[in-house]
Length: 253
Image (tube, rainbow, N blue to C red):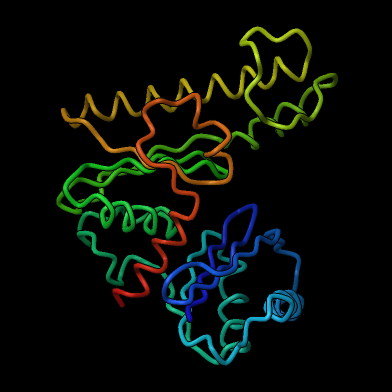
Protein backbone atom coordinates (compact mmCIF):
# COMPACT_ATOMS: atom_id res chain seq x y z
CA UNK A 1 0.00 0.00 0.00
CA UNK A 2 0.99 3.60 -0.61
CA UNK A 3 1.00 6.50 1.84
CA UNK A 4 0.79 9.92 0.16
CA UNK A 5 1.48 13.10 2.12
CA UNK A 6 0.59 16.56 0.82
CA UNK A 7 2.04 19.25 3.10
CA UNK A 8 0.30 22.57 2.50
CA UNK A 9 0.41 25.93 4.24
CA UNK A 10 -2.85 25.32 6.13
CA UNK A 11 -3.25 21.54 6.28
CA UNK A 12 -1.29 18.33 5.88
CA UNK A 13 -3.27 15.65 4.04
CA UNK A 14 -2.25 12.04 4.55
CA UNK A 15 -3.95 9.33 2.47
CA UNK A 16 -3.57 5.58 2.07
CA UNK A 17 -4.05 3.81 -1.30
CA UNK A 18 -4.49 0.04 -1.47
CA UNK A 19 -3.66 -0.25 -5.17
CA UNK A 20 -7.29 0.13 -6.25
CA UNK A 21 -8.56 3.19 -4.39
CA UNK A 22 -7.93 5.63 -1.57
CA UNK A 23 -9.12 3.78 1.51
CA UNK A 24 -8.47 6.44 4.16
CA UNK A 25 -7.48 10.09 4.26
CA UNK A 26 -6.67 12.39 7.16
CA UNK A 27 -6.31 16.15 7.42
CA UNK A 28 -4.26 17.76 10.19
CA UNK A 29 -3.26 21.36 10.80
CA UNK A 30 0.13 22.48 9.46
CA UNK A 31 1.79 23.59 12.68
CA UNK A 32 5.43 24.58 12.32
CA UNK A 33 5.74 24.79 16.11
CA UNK A 34 5.16 21.04 16.53
CA UNK A 35 8.24 18.92 17.05
CA UNK A 36 9.04 15.87 14.96
CA UNK A 37 8.11 13.65 17.93
CA UNK A 38 4.71 15.31 18.23
CA UNK A 39 3.98 14.66 14.57
CA UNK A 40 5.08 11.05 15.04
CA UNK A 41 2.50 10.58 17.82
CA UNK A 42 -0.22 12.12 15.62
CA UNK A 43 0.62 9.95 12.60
CA UNK A 44 0.94 6.78 14.67
CA UNK A 45 -2.41 7.46 16.34
CA UNK A 46 -4.19 8.14 13.04
CA UNK A 47 -2.94 4.90 11.50
CA UNK A 48 -3.76 2.85 14.59
CA UNK A 49 -7.30 4.17 14.92
CA UNK A 50 -7.90 3.54 11.20
CA UNK A 51 -6.77 -0.09 11.64
CA UNK A 52 -4.08 0.33 9.00
CA UNK A 53 -1.28 -2.16 9.50
CA UNK A 54 2.04 -0.36 9.19
CA UNK A 55 3.63 -3.54 7.81
CA UNK A 56 1.39 -3.29 4.72
CA UNK A 57 2.81 0.11 3.73
CA UNK A 58 5.56 -0.48 1.18
CA UNK A 59 5.67 2.90 -0.60
CA UNK A 60 5.43 6.55 0.38
CA UNK A 61 5.48 9.86 -1.49
CA UNK A 62 5.66 13.40 -0.10
CA UNK A 63 4.85 16.77 -1.61
CA UNK A 64 5.63 19.82 0.51
CA UNK A 65 5.43 23.60 0.14
CA UNK A 66 6.44 24.12 3.79
CA UNK A 67 10.22 23.54 4.05
CA UNK A 68 10.17 23.58 7.87
CA UNK A 69 7.87 20.54 7.92
CA UNK A 70 9.39 18.58 5.05
CA UNK A 71 12.27 16.93 6.92
CA UNK A 72 10.11 16.19 9.97
CA UNK A 73 7.51 14.36 7.90
CA UNK A 74 10.17 12.51 5.91
CA UNK A 75 11.82 11.25 9.10
CA UNK A 76 8.50 10.15 10.59
CA UNK A 77 7.46 8.22 7.47
CA UNK A 78 10.76 6.32 7.65
CA UNK A 79 10.33 5.79 11.39
CA UNK A 80 6.71 4.59 11.13
CA UNK A 81 6.77 2.45 8.00
CA UNK A 82 10.46 1.73 7.41
CA UNK A 83 10.21 2.96 3.83
CA UNK A 84 12.13 5.78 2.17
CA UNK A 85 9.56 8.25 0.84
CA UNK A 86 9.82 9.65 -2.67
CA UNK A 87 10.19 13.43 -2.41
CA UNK A 88 8.43 15.27 -5.24
CA UNK A 89 10.70 17.79 -6.96
CA UNK A 90 11.66 18.86 -10.46
CA UNK A 91 14.27 16.14 -10.96
CA UNK A 92 11.98 13.09 -10.82
CA UNK A 93 9.80 11.61 -13.55
CA UNK A 94 6.37 13.29 -13.65
CA UNK A 95 5.35 12.56 -17.24
CA UNK A 96 5.90 16.24 -18.02
CA UNK A 97 8.68 17.87 -20.05
CA UNK A 98 11.33 18.60 -17.41
CA UNK A 99 12.90 21.46 -19.35
CA UNK A 100 9.61 23.40 -19.29
CA UNK A 101 9.06 23.23 -15.50
CA UNK A 102 9.64 26.68 -13.93
CA UNK A 103 12.25 26.65 -11.18
CA UNK A 104 9.83 28.08 -8.60
CA UNK A 105 6.86 25.81 -9.37
CA UNK A 106 5.65 24.19 -6.14
CA UNK A 107 5.52 20.42 -5.81
CA UNK A 108 1.74 20.58 -5.23
CA UNK A 109 1.23 22.31 -8.59
CA UNK A 110 3.66 19.86 -10.19
CA UNK A 111 1.52 16.98 -8.87
CA UNK A 112 -1.63 18.70 -10.14
CA UNK A 113 -0.18 19.13 -13.62
CA UNK A 114 1.19 15.58 -13.80
CA UNK A 115 -2.26 14.17 -13.05
CA UNK A 116 -3.96 16.65 -15.38
CA UNK A 117 -1.76 15.63 -18.31
CA UNK A 118 -2.32 11.96 -17.45
CA UNK A 119 -6.10 12.41 -17.42
CA UNK A 120 -6.29 14.58 -20.56
CA UNK A 121 -3.13 13.91 -22.61
CA UNK A 122 -4.63 15.35 -25.79
CA UNK A 123 -5.76 18.69 -24.33
CA UNK A 124 -4.33 21.82 -22.80
CA UNK A 125 -5.48 21.66 -19.18
CA UNK A 126 -5.93 24.28 -16.47
CA UNK A 127 -6.07 22.99 -12.88
CA UNK A 128 -7.84 25.38 -10.53
CA UNK A 129 -6.90 24.56 -6.93
CA UNK A 130 -9.03 26.20 -4.23
CA UNK A 131 -6.61 26.07 -1.30
CA UNK A 132 -4.89 28.58 0.98
CA UNK A 133 -3.95 30.18 -2.32
CA UNK A 134 -6.17 30.02 -5.38
CA UNK A 135 -3.90 28.63 -8.07
CA UNK A 136 -4.34 28.17 -11.81
CA UNK A 137 -1.69 25.90 -13.33
CA UNK A 138 -1.59 25.11 -17.04
CA UNK A 139 -0.10 22.23 -19.03
CA UNK A 140 -0.16 21.89 -22.81
CA UNK A 141 -1.12 18.76 -24.71
CA UNK A 142 2.53 17.85 -25.32
CA UNK A 143 3.32 17.84 -21.59
CA UNK A 144 4.87 21.31 -21.54
CA UNK A 145 4.29 23.22 -18.31
CA UNK A 146 3.08 26.66 -19.40
CA UNK A 147 2.95 28.34 -15.98
CA UNK A 148 0.59 29.45 -13.26
CA UNK A 149 -1.49 32.27 -11.80
CA UNK A 150 -1.85 32.74 -8.04
CA UNK A 151 -4.36 34.71 -5.97
CA UNK A 152 -5.34 34.66 -2.28
CA UNK A 153 -7.62 31.71 -1.51
CA UNK A 154 -11.26 32.18 -0.54
CA UNK A 155 -10.69 31.48 3.17
CA UNK A 156 -7.57 33.66 3.10
CA UNK A 157 -9.68 36.54 1.73
CA UNK A 158 -12.39 36.05 4.36
CA UNK A 159 -9.79 35.92 7.14
CA UNK A 160 -8.21 39.12 5.85
CA UNK A 161 -11.60 40.87 5.99
CA UNK A 162 -12.31 39.53 9.46
CA UNK A 163 -8.87 40.39 10.80
CA UNK A 164 -8.61 43.89 9.36
CA UNK A 165 -12.10 45.28 9.92
CA UNK A 166 -13.87 46.20 13.14
CA UNK A 167 -17.46 45.24 12.34
CA UNK A 168 -17.34 42.51 9.69
CA UNK A 169 -17.93 38.99 11.11
CA UNK A 170 -16.24 35.68 10.35
CA UNK A 171 -18.55 33.72 8.04
CA UNK A 172 -19.04 30.22 6.69
CA UNK A 173 -18.66 30.33 2.94
CA UNK A 174 -21.65 29.18 0.91
CA UNK A 175 -23.56 30.50 -2.08
CA UNK A 176 -26.00 33.25 -0.95
CA UNK A 177 -29.54 33.44 -2.27
CA UNK A 178 -28.92 36.89 -3.76
CA UNK A 179 -25.90 38.77 -5.05
CA UNK A 180 -27.16 41.81 -3.12
CA UNK A 181 -26.70 41.00 0.55
CA UNK A 182 -29.09 42.34 3.18
CA UNK A 183 -26.79 41.61 6.14
CA UNK A 184 -23.03 41.46 6.73
CA UNK A 185 -22.72 37.68 6.37
CA UNK A 186 -24.62 37.46 3.07
CA UNK A 187 -22.82 40.54 1.76
CA UNK A 188 -19.43 38.92 2.42
CA UNK A 189 -20.61 35.61 0.93
CA UNK A 190 -21.81 37.41 -2.18
CA UNK A 191 -18.60 39.37 -2.66
CA UNK A 192 -16.36 36.36 -2.12
CA UNK A 193 -18.34 33.64 -3.90
CA UNK A 194 -19.56 35.60 -6.93
CA UNK A 195 -16.37 37.65 -7.06
CA UNK A 196 -14.13 34.60 -7.09
CA UNK A 197 -16.37 32.79 -9.58
CA UNK A 198 -15.94 35.78 -11.89
CA UNK A 199 -12.17 35.77 -11.35
CA UNK A 200 -11.91 32.08 -12.20
CA UNK A 201 -13.92 32.48 -15.41
CA UNK A 202 -11.86 35.53 -16.44
CA UNK A 203 -8.51 33.80 -15.87
CA UNK A 204 -9.69 30.79 -17.90
CA UNK A 205 -10.94 33.01 -20.73
CA UNK A 206 -7.72 35.03 -20.86
CA UNK A 207 -5.67 31.80 -20.80
CA UNK A 208 -7.60 30.57 -23.84
CA UNK A 209 -7.07 33.89 -25.60
CA UNK A 210 -3.31 33.69 -25.05
CA UNK A 211 -3.11 30.03 -26.11
CA UNK A 212 -5.59 30.58 -28.96
CA UNK A 213 -7.37 27.34 -28.13
CA UNK A 214 -9.88 25.89 -25.69
CA UNK A 215 -8.66 24.40 -22.42
CA UNK A 216 -10.02 21.57 -20.28
CA UNK A 217 -10.62 22.77 -16.70
CA UNK A 218 -10.16 20.61 -13.59
CA UNK A 219 -11.16 21.96 -10.17
CA UNK A 220 -9.77 20.65 -6.89
CA UNK A 221 -9.16 21.81 -3.34
CA UNK A 222 -11.27 22.20 -0.23
CA UNK A 223 -13.86 24.69 -1.53
CA UNK A 224 -14.06 23.45 -5.11
CA UNK A 225 -17.39 21.69 -4.55
CA UNK A 226 -18.87 24.73 -2.79
CA UNK A 227 -18.14 27.23 -5.55
CA UNK A 228 -18.40 24.88 -8.57
CA UNK A 229 -22.14 25.56 -9.22
CA UNK A 230 -21.23 29.19 -10.00
CA UNK A 231 -18.54 28.29 -12.55
CA UNK A 232 -19.87 26.70 -15.73
CA UNK A 233 -16.36 26.41 -17.20
CA UNK A 234 -15.35 23.55 -14.87
CA UNK A 235 -15.20 20.30 -16.87
CA UNK A 236 -14.13 17.97 -14.05
CA UNK A 237 -14.48 18.25 -10.29
CA UNK A 238 -11.67 16.18 -8.73
CA UNK A 239 -11.37 16.59 -4.92
CA UNK A 240 -8.51 14.03 -4.70
CA UNK A 241 -6.66 15.39 -7.73
CA UNK A 242 -3.40 16.35 -5.96
CA UNK A 243 -3.24 12.99 -4.17
CA UNK A 244 -3.97 11.19 -7.45
CA UNK A 245 -1.02 13.12 -8.89
CA UNK A 246 1.18 11.97 -6.04
CA UNK A 247 0.22 8.35 -6.66
CA UNK A 248 0.90 8.75 -10.38
CA UNK A 249 4.34 10.19 -9.67
CA UNK A 250 5.06 7.37 -7.24
CA UNK A 251 4.08 4.83 -9.91
CA UNK A 252 6.29 6.53 -12.53
CA UNK A 253 9.31 6.41 -10.23
